[in-house]
Length: 105
Image (tube, rainbow, N blue to C red; front, top):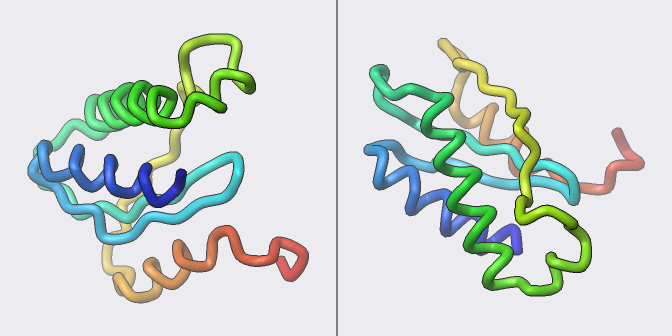
């Protein structure tokens, strides 16, 4: 399901003239590294990304319906941060490490 989410997220990014650089997550959240234009409204993009991926994932993975009473997949919350001068490879490695054995953290 995470792989399909990454495909859908990459498609949404492309539609907003952005690029999905990395995607990974765990059972209860995902991390995305996105290169986006400076004039993009992040809140609008995130709302669109969540709405679209929720609808499509629930349609493609009917088993999700057993776990969610309402027709939603995501919460309304999100966290976005600008990376400034942080090296992209450091950020990629952090995101790639998501879902690793959590007992080592």
